[in-house]
Amino acid sequence: MTIHELAARFNLKPLTIRGYVARRIIPPPYGTTRNASYGLAHIEAIEAYIALKNNNVYPAQALAHCQEAGISLRQYVLERERSIRLHGIGIG
Image (cartoon, rainbow, N blue to C red; front, side, top):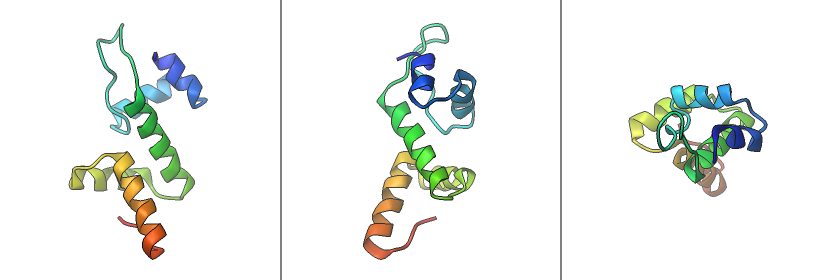
């Protein structure tokens, strides 16, 4: 999908998507600048980012944790949700 399609899916501006890439919230697009495309990995990363914001988790802290742990933002969210379900607590 194009950057415009991805942005429309989340009611965002293409500039916001580019900012997410620059801040490493989502991975870079596939292909070259003119032929860049986005897929499931990008959708999942944006969904994870939104989930963090909706749960009052500071995305910058979550991203730092992910870089230290070598995991994706999506994996962080999944681990956090699992921890909350099992123990009533979050990680990081």
